[in-house]
Image (cartoon, rainbow, N blue to C red; front, top):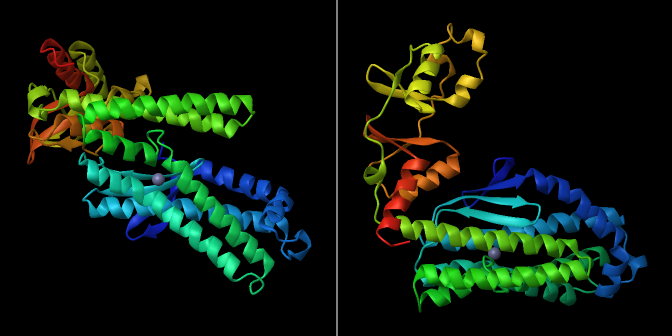
Length: 369
Ligand SMILES: [Zn+2]
C-alpha cells in the first residue's frame, strides 16, 4: 500500500511521502473547488466579483492547503507518538487523507489516548486560529486570501470533528478503546471498539447510498475494513503472546551453496518441498533464493546458471529470542516468505508463516483461542 509513494521531504526528521493516488486526486480536487468557487464565496460572505484570482488557481491552492492540513494533523500524532517512544517510519499522504506509519501504538491506554487526541486537537486549534485570523483581518487582506483562510479553517474544523467520531479506527475510536482498555482487557476493548466502528460504517454506508454520496460509502468501507483488521491484529498478537522465535522456528535448516546450479536447486526444491533457501558461501549466509527467483530464469538456462546469479542478497533476519509477533510483522511488512533466524552471524533456524501457524494450533490445543 505504501510502496507506490514518493518522498517529498522530511519534517522533524519524519519522511513525508506522497502516494500516487494523491497525485490523481489533487488536480481533481483543484477542479472541483474551482467549479464551486461561487458556493464557497457565498458561504464565506465574500462577493464573487471581489475575487481577483482565477477560480481554478484558487482551487489548486485550496487543494494544496487541504493536504497540508492533513499532513500537519498526522505530524501532530507523530510527534506525540515519538515522545511516547514510538518509532515513526513516515507520514503518507494519499487519496483519502493521511496516515502516520508508526510502529505499534503503546498498549498503555493513556499513551494511546494522547497520541490519538493530538491530531484532532491540532486541527481544532488550527481551524480556530485560521477562522479567527480571517475575520480579524477582513478588509485588510485581499478577498482571495480571506476566502482561502476561511475555507482552510472550516476544513480543519471538519477534520477535527470527523476524526473524533468514535468509529474505530478513527482517532475518536482510539480514544474510546483507550477508555475501555482501562476497564477490561486490551483485546476485549478492541473488540467492543471495533464493533462500534463497524456499526458506524454500516450507518455511513447506508447514508451514503441513500444520498448518493459515494465518498461517504468509501469512507464507510475503509472504516469497516480498518476495524476488522485492527481487531484481527490484536487477536493474533494476543494469541501468540509468550512465544519466542526460537519456540516455533525450524531448526533443521536446509541451505544451498551459492555455486549450486539452478537445475540442482529445482530438483532439491522438488524433493524437499521447500520454496526458499538461505544461500551460503564458506559457511556464511550470503542471501536467499526462492521459487520466484528461479522463475525469472528460462528453463533452458537452468543448467548454466548458478544460484548466486539469481539470489537476492538482502537478508531478512531475526533474533531467536525475539517475540514471535515481531517476526510475523516483519514477514508481512517486508512481504517475504521466510526470515533467517540468526544469532550474530550464525544461522540457527528459519521461520515461515506456516511455522507461526503452529503457534496458533498449539494455543488452540491449550484452549487459549
Ligand atoms: Zn488523526
